[in-house]
Length: 496
Image (cartoon, rainbow, N blue to C red; front, side, top):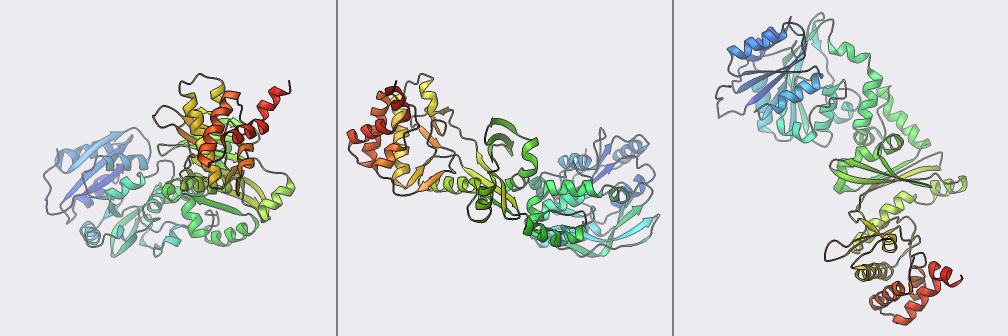
């Protein structure tokens, strides 16, 4: 059990991941325990060591009431840090590698900065190299723009546990977990402060992680681009390039040649990375629910059920038209969904879209929405028995009338694009596949003709026509007659 820590100071949890650190661990622990800041707990996480690190860690846990020792199977430094932080009681977190040292005053000085300024999210210090190489560790001055190209924040920096929770912890799928973590914490606001004094001593030895990372540069950059495309798009106008310092220039040239339009619903900004990555990930992810001229896939992201529609690349002439003059189908689907919702007409909530092309030629577009909660299609009315069929038809006719009253003419108004849910007292109707909509004055002729692709019976037409006429204040018999005149299924039956 840990000792009762002073209540007047916030607890700092020092997290020390350990993997075969026997030659250094005692010196590291002595360095931390010599801190002038006493509201301290030290959490050691052994990550599957095969040397005597476990015995050393256990010895300190036995002799110091504020030192705690836990073991896990070898899963990497990020998993060890996350494990330790999840067990911590501290308001503030300080990761310390098992071969490094800190100064006595560093924690106290860093805590003071965080307590006096809530806009500061991370506090580090100047650092000194020792071991196989000695001298000042020359880290560049911090800026968010510079953080896109390299990490200039030592892993041994103090931050709030609430920020670790907010960003979902250290990423366990990337080698430069500290760089990725600082991006997560700082990309949407907040400052970093580097204390002028040397507070961190970074040991250089044969297996130092900095040497290993240089060999994995391309892999690290690829993973960072997958994790934070929105951050790099904002700061670099595109992805981080292997030649990192030239990223902005390369992206400017690439954007001139390859066009891309992206929009994310502000209420779902957490899905920005998912949407930006769709062109790369769509073919190898998600569950296909329909594949034809276009393709529909379902994704479960952040506890949200999403539907992504990938529109087929059009023929060459239309690629020019879409590339230069016309909005893509995905963009139109998004805009039209917002317009319907503004008028109180049901449709799945639009999440965003992305359109890509090159040399002024349109290539592909993707539209993302929430999955509808409606379990049935209009077509199901002809396949299943529904006790409230008449009410369902009236609700569909009402929604159709509201579309037309507001100047919306759906050019693909078929039985597969009308959804309904009759499980509640108020029947819910949603309209989908919105990219082919016209905004015009919809008179009685155009309105009744819009029912032409629905499979109907004489009884169905009576219900649809009467309710449609009631809402639009037309003559009931005129509407019924016009729907019968234009409807494909009725004319087909009559021609037999």
